[in-house]
Image (cartoon, rainbow, N blue to C red):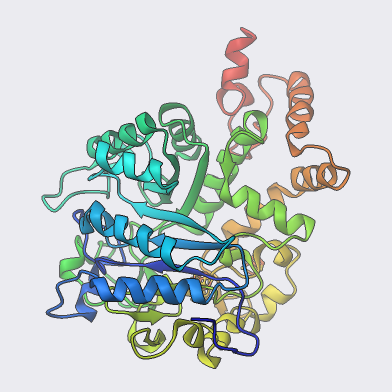
Amino acid sequence: MSAPAIADAPSAFHLLAKPTGAVCNLDCSYCFFLSKEMLYPGSRFRMADELLEAYIEQLIEAHSHVPEVQIAWQGGEPTLMGVEFFRRSVELAERYLKPGQRALYTIQTNGTLLDAEWAAFFRENGFLVGISIDGPRELHDAYRVNKGGKGSFDQVMRGLEHLQAAGVEWNALTTIHAANADHGREVYCFLRDECGAGFVQFIPIIERVSEAADGEVPWSSWRDRPLYEQKGDLVTNRSVSAEQYGRFLIDVFEEWVRRDVGEVYVQMFDVALANWVGEPPSLCIHSETCGLALALEHTGDLYSCDHFVEPRFKLGNIRETRMLELVSSPKQRQFGLDKRDTLPQYCLECDVRFACHGGCPKDRFISTPDGEPGLNYLCAGFKAFFHHVDGPMRFMGERLRVNGAPAEIMGLYATEDARRGRNDACTCGSGRKWKRCHGAELARVDQW
Ligand code: SF4
Ligand code: SF4
């Protein structure tokens, strides 16, 4: 079927499909999504075969004018569907793709159920696999626990080994929360050195709550909590603070910019560089508008965004209305434009707005210094990070402009570091001495 003509329909968009809905074999204490089970009481939480076909067909139809269609799976835990479900999804995609078109398959998983069969399937079909891992064992296990409350680190690492043995392309998705927020460099070095990650994505955990909880975490598990919605101007004590978020990113940046530019892809740094050179960034959060990253439930219900799977943000069901029509609907357009149009004056006057764009609307629940509501909870962290990287981003942007390589910045840092006194303050702003902070390894090499 050819795509129906819809004026101003987007030529491409991201859609996270959740074949098991919110159902997961883990019980991560910070997971906002597990409670979404409550939206579908009595459901078997398995995407039906005929819906799978409708989904693939409509997704490809909606991408008629571009050469690549991203088919992205997420959860809950999508691997609970079993590998046969995904085999069928690939067969269907191959059937519906137009000549010259290709599919890019991605799946986000907690990694615990992966074995050699999964790895072989991913490898065979060129899947890009996102693994959720929060750092070394004690940091990962702080919140990423199974139904019995036990840490999942060993199972994740076993799953990762299967992927690596089969040569599957993978990336790390690491959340930043109260337990690991003060360990940025340690987390990053673990991902790079112990896991061999070449692509790292950091996601801040911000769990909103409405009522004061006497300083206690109000819920230890999603089972005790009501349906999670984007409401409330307080956060749980598992959440990262704005200052910690900024420090975490700076801590990682100071390591990355000396050793790994061009080798390890850190999404936030790439997004920042894109904004510094005036290219569209690959992340909605730091784009001017959004609305092109939707979520599909196992029933066919389509929602404005993965973070807004709640009744007021349901666009419709693809069994009843074609996906392209829902994605192009006035409601969804407005959702995306609101990101830009609801910024407080404080953001409009901000010197790093071009890089930040106010962050994600889900996190805009604090007030500006002059009392206007709608400022992003992470604002102080965004400002700290974007100000910190201004010089290096300008340098890398300039190298790109003249067809040079951003990695040339590592030489600049090496020259400056060679001149640095070992007792000088570290460049990350931690207040620690250079030799005890980001210069520690260099100091050892030079035997200072
Ligand atoms: S609401 Fe946030 S996460 Fe969702 S599309 Fe917009 S910026 Fe992205
Ligand atoms: S850094 Fe803060 S003030 Fe500036 S655009 Fe971002 S959220 Fe707004």
